[in-house]
Structures are given as C-alpha cells and as structure tokens.
Length: 433
Ligand code: GDP
Ligand code: IMO
Ligand code: MG
Image (cartoon, rainbow, N blue to C red):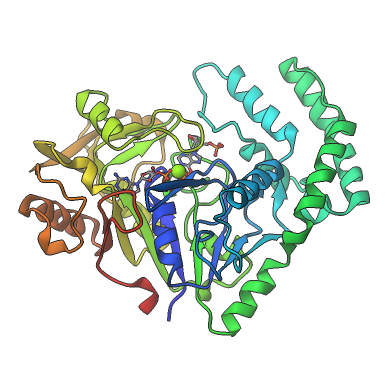
C-alpha cells in the first residue's frame, strides 16, 4: 500500500486536477502542499466541470479528508467562495472533511496590490504572474513577517501583525509605485469576518496526517503548478514562488519524506505555458493555434491564452530526476488527433553546437540561444476519446506512446483521452506500490 504524490512535469496545467480526482477514489486523505489560488485544477464528472483553486481535488468524493497543508498560501476570501460554491451546488460531500493547516500563510490584500503593481511597473521584464499575491505572500513568510492562519484567528495577534505589516506595505506602495495607501481598519474588519467563518476548518494538519498514517490509511499529495515553475529548479525568474517538486510534499504537509512512496508526474502530450519565460518547443504558427483551440488551452485561473508547443522530453526528463518520478500520467492525447505529423523535442542545441539532452541550461542567455531538435512522427486521424484499452488505440498513436516512454525512460501509468473522469486508459495502480 503506497502513498502517492502527484506533480506537474511541465509548466503547469498538465491535468493534475483530473488525475487527483481519479486517484482520490483509492485514497483516504488528499493534501495540497504548496502554491495558492494561482492554481486552477479542473475536474469533469458526468459532464459537470468544477475548477478548484485551493481546495484539494479529492473534494468531490465522499468520506475523504481534504487538507490544505502548511506549505500553501491561503487567500481566505477565495477559499470561502470556493467552499460556498461547492455547498451551493450540492457537491460538498456530507462526510468529507476539509482542514486548513494553522501554519499556512495568509494572502493579504497588500500582497495582491504589490503583485499587480510590480508587474505593471516592469516594462519588458514581466513574469506574467496570476496577480493573486502569491510571490509577496511567500516573501513575507521567508522574511518572517507573514500572518499565519493561527494568527488570523487570534484577534490580538492578528491586529498586532496587521499593524506592523501595513505600515511597511503602505510605505512601499506609496513611495515605490505611487499607489494609494491601504486602510488597516477596513482590512481588520473584513479579515476578522473570514477568520470567524474559517475557524471550524483550522487544525494541526500534520497531526491529522500522522494519525491517518498510523491507521494505515492512504495519502495522496496534490502538487500545484509544474516542475519548471519551481523557485529553485525552474526557469528562474520566470517561476512561481514555491517549490513545486515532489520533495515539498513532505515539507509542505509536515510529514517525513519516507511517507511518500510513489511520485506520479503528470505530462501533457504536448507542452503549454502561461505567462512569460523561455519555451523552446513553442509553436507560434497555425499548429500552435489549433492545439490551443482543440485543447481549450485558456487559463483556468486567469482565462489567459496558454502558449502551446510540441512535447519537450528534455523538460520531462529533468522533472523525472528532480522529483524521483516513478510513473507518468500522459494527458490530453486526444488533442493531437488529426495532426498529420507530430514532433517530439529530444534535445536543445546552441549555435556553437552545444547539446542539452538531460537538463535545460540554467543560464537564460544560453537557453535563449537554444534551438529545438525534433524527432518527427506520423499522426493519426481516428477519434480516440472512447478508447479504454491501449490495444484499441490506432497504431500510430501507440507508436507515439512507445517513443515517448523510451525517450523519457518511464512507463505510463495512465493515458488520458478526454477531460472526463472516465475518459482514461488505466495501465497501473500506483497505490498498489
Ligand atoms: P491542472 O492545473 O494541472 O489541474 O490542469 P488544468 O485543469 O488547469 O488544465 C487542464 C485542462 O485540460 C482542463 O480543462 C481539463 O478538464 C482538461 N483535460 C484534462 N485531461 C484531458 C484530456 O485527456 N483530454 C482533454 N481534451 N482535456 C483534458
Ligand atoms: P496549476 O496548478 C500554469 C505561472 C504564472 C506565471 C508564474 C508566476 O493550475 O498548474 P504566480 O502568480 O505564481 O507568481 O505566477 O507561474 N503559474 C501557473 N501556470 N498553471 C499554474 O497552476 C500556475 N500557477 C502559476 O502564469 O507565469
Ligand atoms: Mg491549472
């Protein structure tokens, strides 16, 4: 019996929500370990779409424990909206429990204001953030001035920390960006209301997970973003502000690394990226537009069009190494149907002939000179969305899968052929160990 971490192997939006929802049926606890409401995880069940930003993607299953871990940054307003939305739609299961770590940090209104102000003042060097205050909230956490969930629900502590923070933030907002200052009294009033609402959900979630482990229950760790948005290992500075690799499943929930047994890397059959930053296999032509339209590649959080390109195995191989991935879930294979030829980026090359096959260069100047080296394959035209057994896939589709497995050096544990929970070819159960 294994505990499983699910992470993205590219630049996010690989289909983590779909896979976590699917795997939640075989698990007891589902825990988000990093990121915040920059994430948008989509689940489609019986044609009904749910997009989650903070609540773990196991929430649609009854009798589960869903945890927002200490590594997450929580915007209380968004979280309350999400809880209310699920309740109003009658899809918050009666016996499923949601807990928020008391150690998680709170995204405050000044974090959002700073995020947006910085982006709008950067000419040409924008990161293209989601504008949700993620970076500034993690900065405060590291600077040891952040407000944690346990501080938010302690009236005295909250008031004190808010006052200390607002003075500095107002100085920064007004002097650096010429913005209007923020009013601590109205923030205090608004956020005290959120604290009251959320009190019932707050707990020592590390203890809850430990208790579940002792009882032999299974834990599913849900990552957000993707490996190449990791603050240490991604295409810095075009990254998010947390560690997105599997190692953080442990730190971001308060359990030891030995409790994570399997790591499933979610990988799209092509590549997308939202926001700025290098993207070697990007397609800026008709094929890229076609993939965007058919794959509905528009952000689940901001609605921005996602940049699209061919699959890049250099990226994916690096993610396998960084997270100790034990199996790959390949998603959105159906989107490639109808393309005459399909390309796989197998290496990068500089004009001087330097080749990169295992790892992408950290130096962005070198990376910007890199050109993709492609292997080209014949596509397929048959509809594959109804296929549930690998053998029923067209020959060229199977060839594509075999090629990818051999390039990446990993077996597929599932192949997703549509957004629906059931539109999946299951090859291996990661919970079996
Ligand atoms: P996440 O952030 O990794 O959870 O991914 P998103 O939810 O942001 O984006 C993935 C999108 O692809 C969502 O709209 C999913 O419903 C959709 N999706 C997931 N798997 C498949 C698939 O196999 N085929 C198709 N066509 N869509 C899929
Ligand atoms: P999920 O979990 C795709 C990107 C933003 C931007 C960069 C930094 O749905 O896969 P941030 O607001 O985090 O400071 O923005 O990271 N980004 C994502 N891209 N999917 C996500 O999440 C993302 N979360 C952040 O577009 O380029
Ligand atoms: Mg997403």
